[in-house]
Image: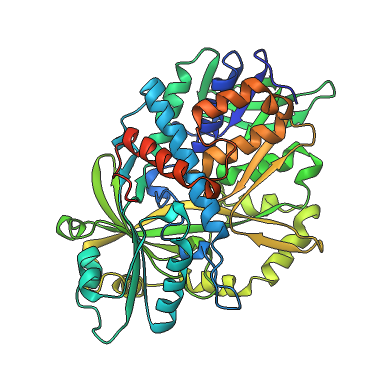
Length: 498
């Protein structure tokens, strides 16, 4: 569709995706009217909240599931390069927003925390070394260090190495330029900026109950004020559904052809949160290991230093669970209500082809405190249960869709679904999600506003906001270093080590 300064844009959901899309649209079309509907009393209450996600700033520095080992023993780094470059694009938007509008103090939402991959055993060490050798050739991963030396490991991660088995072989990689991101604070700051712009209105405690395509073009939305029970109709030229786990039910109500066959599988999460300040102070890194066989990628174990509301925290997990809710504050009827004739077979097929995942979830749900402590002790051998408490993390809905053979497959990532005429887009799925929000929202604009997107005015503005816009990071080694230095300087992060 063609977006103009007189267009009305509706953003459903008060998370990082809607906030990012709203900011980008206002940068290229200042006159467009934007209406944002969030059913909770505040923005960033679900997956964007700091306690509901890992806050890693997924840059593929430490996440081993982004670098699978091929049958011939080599490591495929293509996904890692893609995700790392997308996170750099997100950092550029945030740096631009600070430079242009001073919209937030950098340390309120992003801080330097080294990213470390940590494994044990000869086979795992060999894999990690192959991964390191493949990644370090790419400028995005310049400065990565590898070691099997216990003394060096003890310096990097003293809490992890305390009382470890001396007979084990350990290996780790370290990226000093890793970050911790509070996506909740970032989302709040972006919405605060948006609300100061002309023709932008944020409606809290408002739920979009239904949406219908109009014959003359555009959409009519049925919205309910949850405080007064009043119902209103809203007309929009373009609708973005960025409601996390709540996106699938609304996408289904749109009745667009492109939504047929999509289903969702909810997976809940839990953390162990450290309550002992002396333990918290002994750790200063994000340490990622290898996921158990059959475990979903989001369940890669990690011992995380977090900076939340200016305070240092320490989390371990996540431990997976199962709930029929699509949102942490959703309904237990979310999953059964999402089953339709068009997605019933893909969902059944996905379940059949993912029996190890089902077994894994059953094991996770039936875990005791002692079981969780045993898992924690692999990364913190001195851990005591009295120093940790169980906390509920966010709810994730993994995408189920038809493949080329019309069989349902479970996707561990994000999926963008757009109406053919470009008047509606929905984002489904989870990790790496928030870290790649800018790239995802640029894809929304490219797919839905093709004429605008390719125009000279929009292209020039995108290049002003994102200096690497339109360029491939792998082909611009010098640019990669220069842009990182620029973003890290504005975001007040650790200097780049080349």
